[in-house]
Length: 136
Image (cartoon, rainbow, N blue to C red; front, side):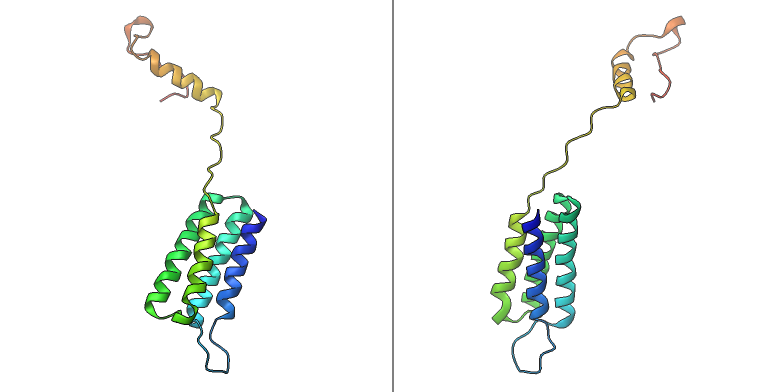
């Protein structure tokens, strides 16, 4: 997961470096857009740090869409569009959602599951299906 964090941080750095604030007349990403995109990049990195690859993948895809939207709106100038789009796409493409394994069933769940099969049989004294404590 360390290399994904590096990619996310690199993406954030690229966006901040291209941020408005220089004194020369060069193309730059609008400051507010750069800050938003950098924040989204950091959220991807944080999810990876937590080991939540599914959240990271979702956030990376949202970042890719936000970059595309910023390019269309002109918040990212055309001269920087290709590198911004490439960085966001690389990040999104490298993160795969791998859900954690399901926890093993608890003993109470096994007991209740067994009861569902027995519900067709009447309980003692003919008062309806059998119920066990804790099973709904």
